[in-house]
Image (tube, rainbow, N blue to C red; front, side, top):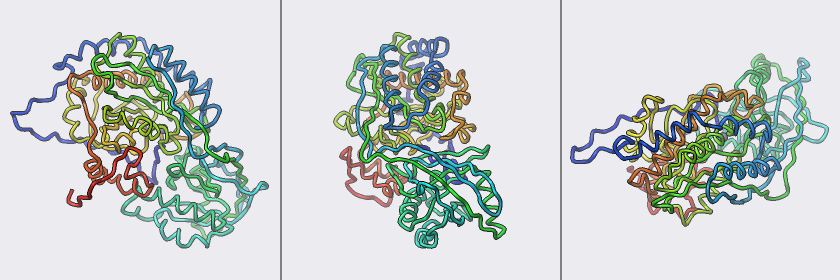
Length: 512
Ligand SMILES: [Zn+2]
């Protein structure tokens, strides 16, 4: 669901300096020393010269298009995923059904400034938000400061009958990630206080420019009765300039969306390459099949799906079978709160001790520039020789950062490496959840290289002689989440302790 917060793209790669270890420890082995190299060479050849990843992406984008979780297009995408996995020759291909709390369908969204000028506004509804009265609603625009959201929450009654324009003034508060949770509280209160509508994106964020709106969910499994719209940066700038001059714009919105009355069904799509020595040990590889609906959902996350299927294709065509099972999973429900990956770890609770982690590509269309090992600092040194072996192919960075905005998170919360393939993806700020998220945004050669990298990483992790990772105990994971500043946000969203996995912290240790 990748929240891009106000003025801040959270991802900043820090190259970890590797500590010098005592000499009596054997250095971790890479593909040159651990026997995996010949298989990897074959996989790289298939991946680079014989790939159909871009064809998969074209089918998913053009023939199915936008596929919001729980809609007929979602089901169509699941069927497509099953057929594709079978055609690649994966084993044990099946779907795993689950439900999300309620479904939502976008209707129309129109807006205009009535005074001091006449101007048509470009808006789109945020996902799982409500409607204005059928004929629309008009009111004065009042500014709300995202960086002072706690006070705004206390004074929400001043917004009754108004249209709230969310802006970011001054310094961000200490714990910026908590803003996402507080913004949800604000929207609930705004609905109760009969605010007509709210202008503001995910986490209160502003649009990217280029006259694009960006839809998205506003919490984990969160819906709001108040209509919330994403407005283009250009139109939002116009409203702000009027307000700066002491002029109150009078605006009319007509926004219509529908909710289902109850839960809706969806499913993860799963297929495997069974391990030749330890089939019960599983490494998960995937992306998310669901998307938003303003365009084709190509970069978020059709690219991840095509990368995953391209990786599966490369390994299958190479004829190489890894020591352990590689399980390819096309998750749904990611955009509503990582629902597919949470459903997966719940469904496979008994099996999680046998998991090695997961590997996800969900950062858009750019080339992979690094691997983030999802909290597991103990694995950085182990992973480095693999990355070094690819130095002629791609320069790659490795760190232990947790990525909480995609299907890596439930695995990291389970104490496993939820590995994020970080991408160099400056265009993503335009295509992310916008009308520009179409096939034009993805270059075929970049996709093919990403798919090959995913295949190589997945195969090496599953095939190396020693098991790559086992789950950490909950206490150690909790310490890691605290150190990575994820803990407070997970608490705020009631995601920790991780009850579904039976993970409870035994004790808190403030020293570390
Ligand atoms: Zn995504």
